[in-house]
Image (cartoon, rainbow, N blue to C red; front, side, top):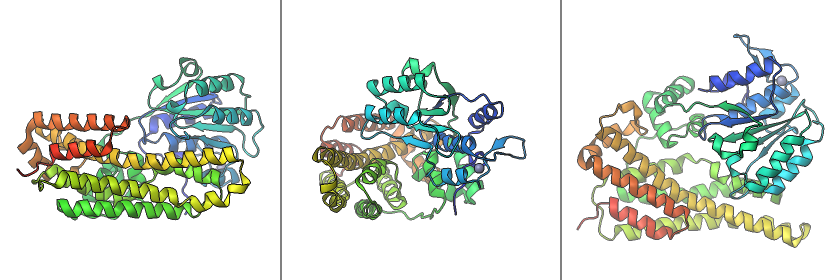
Length: 434
Ligand SMILES: [Zn+2]
């Protein structure tokens, strides 16, 4: 079934939706919007709903008298399956949105829309514009014809140049609480309290991700010991790599492969999320690991991550050699380098996500130790575990654990030896037997 992209499906973002729908109704549409809000709260979904409304041939009014897209015209259908020729997403290639990408946008912005009413450009996220691409964008905004419209997504207003900010209409997004999200999962997806808590905790507090997962969520409450959870994590890493290989085998050309490899960071795989959660839980529960464990354990994790990311990269080799003749050498080389860094990034993300997951366990324990309300817990489905650790470890030790994990994530981002960082974390929190 085709997913509908109208405003009626937007969850927990009524305010920003209303601002946009009112400006549509009043014919006061700005040319540049800056959507400000945390990642995964629905900025992309609202951008899509707004684009659909703008392009729709027959906008309709809902029961509250507010405008929405019809969902059935050609434009709406195209928006729904991401093939509308007049809506374009500009995402970072690598760590930034490059000036070439903005120049291409500049050339397109002057053209008349080919089927819709507007030429729409969604820049996601705007913090990835570097100085030169920001300046090029500013120039584009200044010279843009009346039919072009730009939606910039950012986590805060400081993410864009003041000169861009001053040209933008700012639309602010809410940050829903853990409890609000769990309630939505229960009511919208018919989940029990336990299922909703489990689904949300697997997303590590990422609202959008939990909604995507909720579509075909399979609840599993099994608890694994440290060595089975460790083994299971290694197995699921490779399974994830196999799934990506499978996705890549459907790709037809190198541009598509490149785009897909940069999008790897946003793909979810429930079995790996479960395995990660279980592994971090057993570390968190801290039952006294064998002495040689930290080194061995860390080495195996790093090796598995490396081999999974090498496997993903290798799955594109046939496509690269097939296309050798149809691309200039320099272009091919550039694409190859970019694919390598995208797959390497996928690997380093895995370790960062592991630390982040572990940090969420300790943050929950700190909340419990500080007598906070239990609805503030992310891992509410494992409340009993959290209470135990909170009692045993106490506020100051929990603070130092969180501190250690924050520092470790920062070191990882600075490309310090991942094995050493991981081993240090496991040794310090793993409670090795003397
Ligand atoms: Zn329509």
